[in-house]
Length: 59
Image: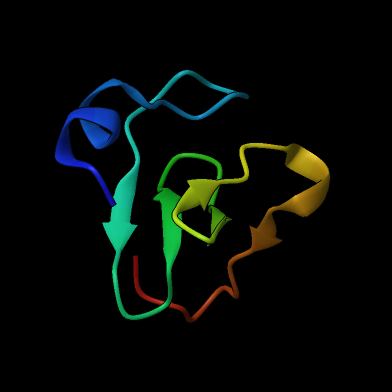
C-alpha cells in the first residue's frame, strides 16, 4: 500500500482518519468501527463493501 495514498485517504462516511492493518489488508475507521477491504492494492472505499467491526475486536 502506497504511503502517500494512505496519507490522503479518509473514511467516506465521517471523513475521519484510517488505520492500515497490513496483515488483514484493511483500512479501519475507529469512529465508525468499519473495516474497508484492500483488493489487489486498491482500497475499496464503499460503505456496502465495508465490514462492521465486532464489539470485542481491537482497533
